[in-house]
Image (cartoon, rainbow, N blue to C red):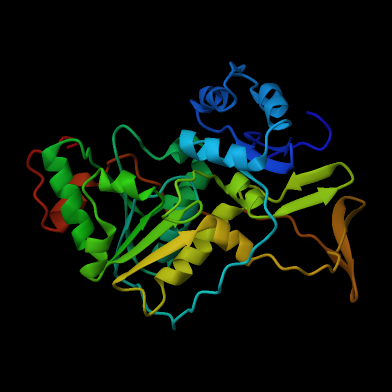
Length: 342
């Protein structure tokens, strides 16, 4: 790739030069190459869209990219200076033991929130549709099991009346709803966050940049666009691997566990979460160096070894899609007659 451009750990995203700065662009979904072609109004190579996108960005501004990307549903945005949001007041914690959590999330951030609530004692029911199961099911099975082990899986088709009615009743029974969709998506399922909140439900809404924004984003591009970009001798680079996702999942779980969470719509912007971790400190970070077969950093108290990460074992097997649909619905007194996925 050209000097100064950098790829994500997974290889599906790039930091690219615009006419007035940097931009983070993701190409993680099967239809993204076609969308990137629409972005630049030209055909791109589906196997490698980056040369064409790089050339287009070099003569266009970050603002133009942002407008077009939002219109087309592309996960891309210009890199902005860090702007920490106003801190959220955090009430004392509450117990979530025994609460019913309905998780509509996919990939990492929302499932991590639900996973942490499950570790704290909540009953977690993951809801998917037949046409759009969680894309993480196609990824690393160990990681998927880590986030979903011990949960129950419900599969419903909101396009069918009986399924739609069951879905509505399931949400009505929930103490906590966790989702990471644009508001109009769940509204298309007949679900209304405000109505649920009025009944006392805790509704955790995770978005790229707030519920009022139409922006699409993944963990890598959101983090970089929020200002979390590292630099070395070769230029700017992404920090971590989709780091906005775990940061957001942790923050969302903490907010859902606060005493004032019942009857509250909790907006969790991934952009704001990342920005809140950044400071304007100019203090140099410790530099890692290789010492034989290990990596270390030099500190005031001597040399500290950077310990290799350890995989946390899953708490159980991840359920197959829809495995528990009938069991969950019946346990909550929801009629299963006519449900298409049974």
